[in-house]
Length: 252
Length: 259
Image (cartoon, rainbow over all chains, first blue to last red; front, side, top):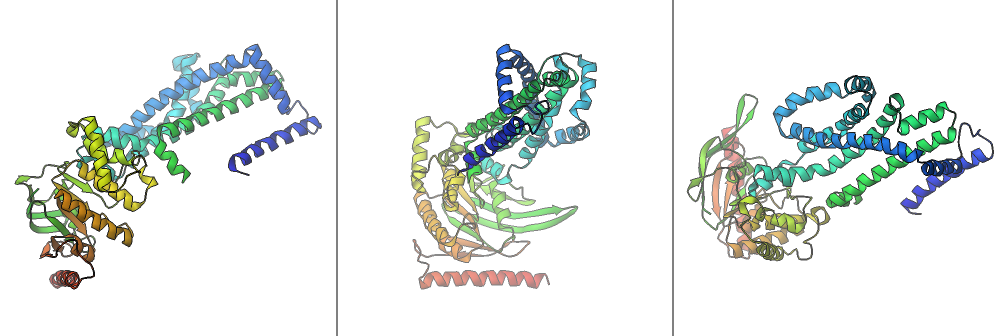
């Protein structure tokens, strides 16, 4: 049995045990909805438009904050890695702010930016920027000296060293940061929507629980898992396309 | 390219203290000459090479390239590194083309680029590997990419910093032969740093023997053997013996001076 077959088997066994436990009445359906029920409920919620609407609202917020975080994290991390002065000025700020939970920032964000989209996008940005920033920073710092010197002795100018050496060296770690940030963003958007939103997957799950709609609750959770999984796969696929040399290293 | 070092000295700073690494190095290297810099590890011969490359600034003295002083690194003195220093994200062909595609050097037209690349790939014997990434090929092949990449910019001098030190002995011998072959075809000035007596005797027109730190050139030994050299011939063995005695003497002088 090869690796991908083993992966499939572990998922199928989990689903089968889960389904069996509910069908045999070992666990009340009120606590645990059967996979078949969840699937059925997802189809129903998709058809009624409830799920697409809520998932769409979550993803728009999430992706806005996430993409802003990627862009600014790469720029700030790159500056801190490349310029000593930027490191001196920004590092204390980053280290002071980073341990503060994004959810602790949310009330503040609402105070500043109101209850609308902006406050949630801000919190996602705040949660997502650090993994990208720190990965970029560490990557810039770890460019082998001899690689840069090789570029110099071949006649590269400083901006060519940056574009053709440092940038490529940093790409794979930036993708690693992007994967971590995506997972963090998914966690934070759901939590933020539970606190302050009238739409979104977090809101949907919370109201389903309050209304004792267990199947809806599970449908929401499964949707979150699916989005997280697909998103991570997409980022990894993008990395193999953009960094072919790095994929090869991973496989050997 | 003709290279002259006059009264060259270099200190490394350890805290407030200056630690001399090179002391009063005077060399004159003729155009097209194959020169080996031989000495124990950490003696400063690599520092000397890096000063010629423009990667390190000398503390004292000057280096003249065809009569004008070194001003930073440049493609007129391309370098081959011990750790290859290839660009992992570029293929073999892209690595070789790097120096030809910098803004400073991109006057070559595109079909030229393909021609030059094909010739260089053939020169170092890497046909069929143009599209491979560096991590997919062996250490010996990587260093051949390093040599082709350095030759691509058509430098006046090729600076080689222990380029075969990390390569197994059998591959190293093959690379030494290939290097002599390439050198005799291109007639570049070559500065070759090594701590292998055998390698220096095989490659060099002349061998500058460095003593231990602070290093200076203890003796310059001319190797006047016809090429290709036969490592098993009595003349070659005699040359190796001469270099060994010179290194022993250099170490002895230093030990006498610093008890």
